[in-house]
Image (cartoon, rainbow, N blue to C red):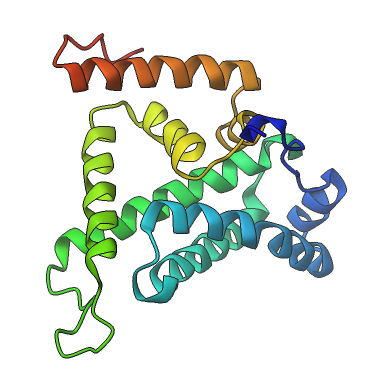
Length: 196
């Protein structure tokens, strides 16, 4: 079964989004309960699970808090609410990467710790870094699309919903272009213009 054989991505109910925007506490709680696993999955996929996932969990909490802060000002259609949330999540993940880059003394592993990472974890970390470096050659929209589709395993429909694209077909076309660009990069060929 391919990832696209799954059921379409769940969306929050229109009435829940509208009631939450209007300040209904029960609707806000219901909306956060719906969003938490989606946001956590996204953050874990982008940030990894260092320290038993606490960094990703903290980032997911920051995303949900930012959604709460922005909720009263949300003025778009309820159908575009998930792209709004994933936009916030994307910015929070970028903030986390910037924080890590500034703090080179990040205490991920204590050498005296008996739970030292094994060769498999080093290989996975190395592979993740290589993938991230490769993805850095893509425009942000293509990088985000491939992250959702390939790294996180989202369906084309889920990705379209998360990124606010018109259809799963648009996701597949963009994915094809992004993969073709990466293929040319790996083969040492010329890259097309950035607007691809």
